[in-house]
Image 1: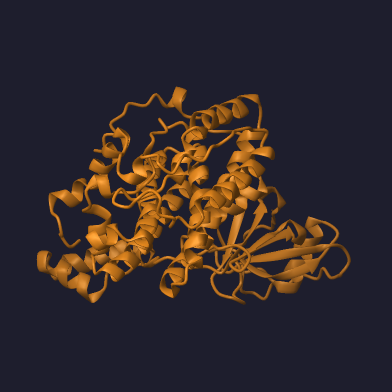
Image 2: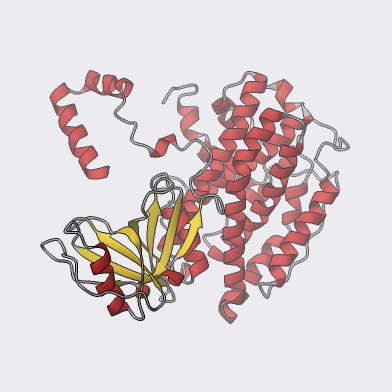
Length: 254
Length: 202
């Protein structure tokens, strides 16, 4: 475990995998509560996809570091989870906030997986290439929602803009340098500054088609947040819930 | 129960009310290349783009398929569903735009794609479809303007997921699982349960 947690590439993969694991867990709370039946089904399918993507990445790390993927997923200390705290921020079952949050994260993940697949590692690329088309579907679906909610009418526009206003200041968390055991000056983030510019450009393009506005800032490299193990209380709430069954009987075979 | 789910909801004030702004769409899936599209179900969506996305998320993930087509429910014109199979009529002609024809092999079954005909209107299309396709083996005809059928192929947009989807297949009755069950249930009750479960769900 130690070797994995101190390897820069493994840490970068873990950051994406942990985002996916926690996002899938949090988003599955919308099952049965979607604003219309079909979206209920679609959102649940996407939450399943998120968990599957996390598994694909955990399995890759498990093979590299001779660890069980379930152990990686459920048996680390909270400080070693490298997800961004935007992922676990409660949306209070506000659909506008849920969609905006998912969309900002999905665009980030799409770019991150693209970059991971470009690293010279055939096995990693093969795994990322399984995730990429599914991630593209999620982005397309969420963009469709942003555009509709932004242009459907005054109330809808007001609510989605309000959600954007609440989340735009937190979105920079996505770009925190991950890994509390690694120095912050390690330049292993697949071009963090350039990726932020590309992410911002993609977000702004959709916003411009949706009658919405938001601005985003890239945080300093020295920022210490969820990705470096200093998690908000809502992460710990989700973590306790996520690992509850595992803690009852560690290592049990289901 | 999860702490989150313990939260008390006042659904009427917290969640968006069911919207009346959706429309009804019909979906047909194609299980293998060259196989006919078969009726899969319907869904509600506000517009075609979301209908296509929902169709992929819903019907595209029920069973492995390589493509699906979607049309607005209002675009379908159905002929009567007879107790006896339909016999060919005598309406001929090739004028007019293209209509896609779906036929019902048995009452209570699913419509499946049969081909296309040309006709100036839906009524003529139904008559010509019956003449062209009725062979004493199906009970009903549906026609849909071909330009109102919207196709999604797995090549243009991902439908069936690329990650391990084994959990969606009925593999719960493998030898290994059966052996575990029969250790705790007698064989006969297990067989009855299995039979009923498969009948209900698959």
